[in-house]
Length: 240
Image (tube, rainbow, N blue to C red; front, side):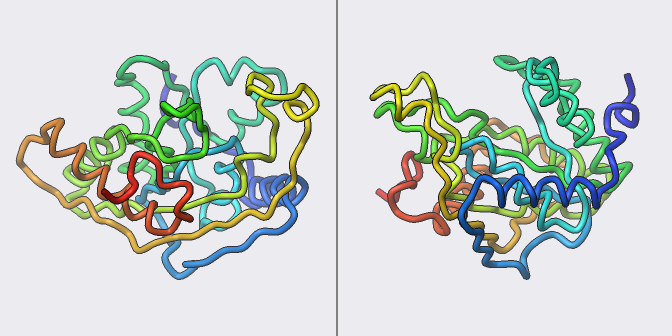
């Protein structure tokens, strides 16, 4: 299946309206700061923290074009939700391995279609050592690899736009969380905050990217996200 076949998205305005409606339905209010830093056009990558399942909506609402997202392949099999992800243009990913096909698809979308890619570099909402889902966790460097390959193929810098999103973490209950059953099944509407920072550019280079160097670069992106988040969310990237 070609990248073009996978990413035949529904009408961008319809995606924007659906996303806006869902986020307003499940939140009390939405506050946006840093609007001037939102990518105007692709190719570009949006990188955000990952606390809840609704962080995906603000980029669809505020970006100039409907971004592409990664999703674990199993999500596409979920009734209704899976179809929505396909219509939104999700790239299926095999969890627990380096999915080279997914990486190549993302690079192709950036290079050939000048898309905006939305990612959560932490990769998961899994608990940290304190069983906390909300604090920043160590990020994976896959988007640096993608940005570098795209920059080299296009011979132009690729911007990575850091987004801090909070207030989404408690909207949908986590039924496997410890605590009273009522709390675990209760929907919590909260104020949602979206803060966008200045882009970090990945420039064309003929030097081989090492794992260590890519980790340094993604940590730089995550520290920019940290600076926009309230202190209680800093987690792995708290200043030491």
